[in-house]
Image (cartoon, rainbow, N blue to C red; front, side, top):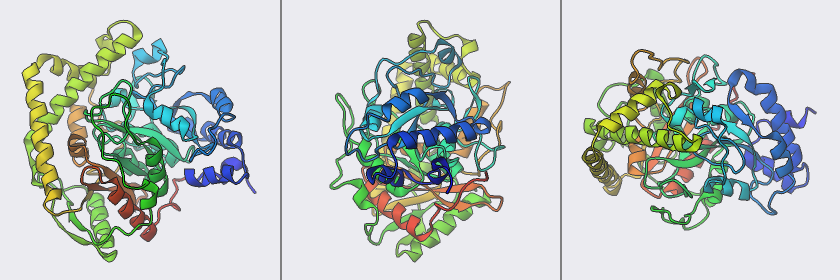
Length: 477
């Protein structure tokens, strides 16, 4: 027999919690096993940048009785998720140097604790979550366990790399333009972006923005059970998703019925995607047909509207200006240009040059886009199947452009054409690890449901997982 760190390395969170409930291990033992794995594996990956191991050891003795994820070790993303008494940097140099310490738990953190998980530290994020790669001036590049020359994606790149490398079975993540789904695709994981308003962003963020909180996992059942644990409104929420009729975990293994699924194997504007990504979608479509579903070419025509990209970019630039100002308040002074990565400083400058009317028009345009896209589901489709990203994981440094500060965001948009639309519409979308390239890189596919229909996504995701399992796939040592 190997050590507990080895024996539990590839277990999902459900199985790890079962070991505790059955009295085979203690929460403290699971925590020590995860600490051992982080210390052994993280050096070349660079996923865990704040380590709270002593706090975790103390917390392991105070797990709520009957918690669904009792004793399960996890990590929190270094972006917006406050943990009382611990520093947060949002991937930024000035915040890192100031060592700003949070005075409260964000709602999602409170619920992670209540679910019985033990927080071991923070994972890397791109600065302010702006880019779909995790390479920052503050912490350097986070690398993909499947190929260290490649990105694990972003902005939740550290979370995905840590789970893919077997450090922890689940990790907190967030998604404002694809930041759960993109890393899940790059790292061979399950990445669900819940419906807007499914998980409270309290006490200090808006549910009506583009971003949502959740996690990356190894299994559909972990995704479902964790969604049950984290879902629900908080005080003052401005958007609340409709409550499920039964626990999301009950959807795992449930018959989804015969569904009508639209297949999109190219960019919405008609340009092709990488052959591996097209092959992943084609293969997933065939599998869905074998499972009894009707799969036909089709997607919401509004996704091809070039104007949407510009309006989304307007909202994105304004959010960069807001987060820079917010970080300035936390460190006690305005951040200056040398303390912000060029792409974020440039976007904030664009936002400051825009008017309130420009922002209002962007909000109006995105609202029209949302209605037009959702009409496709109302007209008879159940799901949309697409690539998660337009190419395999990018090489480290692929988006670098030292002399052209906005080029990284333009390159990001080319790679991630399939994820931002559903942040704008608020729909749930999931990336599943159903394909690997000939050179061993994970290639995710995305399924999108109507607003509030995580139940349907989980039924189909579990059906696909049973038909084409991925739990045996592990990155090289």
